[in-house]
Image (cartoon, rainbow, N blue to C red; front, side, top):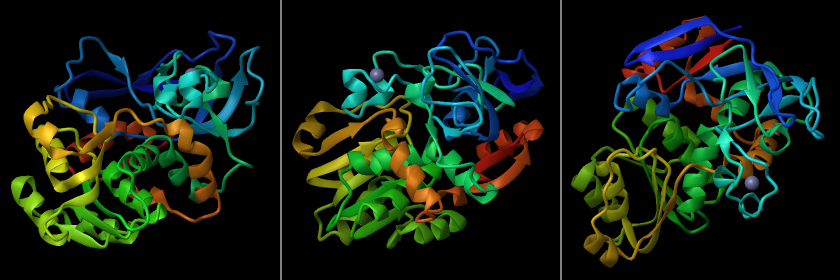
Length: 340
Ligand SMILES: [Zn+2]
């Protein structure tokens, strides 16, 4: 088969790779129906995360099950399935408490890489969720988004305790931030403030449910949020970037007693204890337990209650995956959809 390898900074190659095979009896092999490039793939692409040896890329996936190992009971060949970036057994105590992304058996969700024609998925029964039937083509981008960016945005909004009567601010206008807006709207938030200075992204934010746009960032962005909330700050803030500036902007934009859900992959973030002590802000986040939300998200998509697939504003054949990385790196695309 062919798959995507990252050899070093800005060196993405689509090349011949070994066909994935069943290794553990709990594995499944899927044929990818669509794949995509993640914002977090840009850290190694930009060389910020060093690439010491060529690495198989892609951790968001939907596809048709081709083959399952001898111990797989629930997932069957022919099913259309959605997975996520961590494989989990969905049976341990941590999974049952809703934190599948810290499963005691946690491992990469697609160790052979999902920007590829086929992928091996470990712990198939715990990791994969099948759709009721084979989906129509127009649902596939939304189902793919559930695999990571929607699930992550949902966790950000849930960790920030978005809900009725709440004012939610979202820091970051990438796919995760935009889908945190959609999630907060689904959770019944009263006001949703999108922080973005990009016209196209502002438009999508409003479509997903944002009620206000703030273009300032850093201390000025915090001051704008305070202006909009009687000087108090937002009840809920979703941090969907992962930088020092975005994290401090999020903590400072939340009111005392408020909640920050942080889901951007952190790079070089340090929180000063004294300031945080006096902020009275709840901080919760980390790698999203996407598996916990998949059944509900698939249901919302299947019944056409939400259309998160709109975050894909560039579609390319999988063989042109390198162009997808480039477009996202240059921010000319929000998210690139790759069709095998
Ligand atoms: Zn588990």
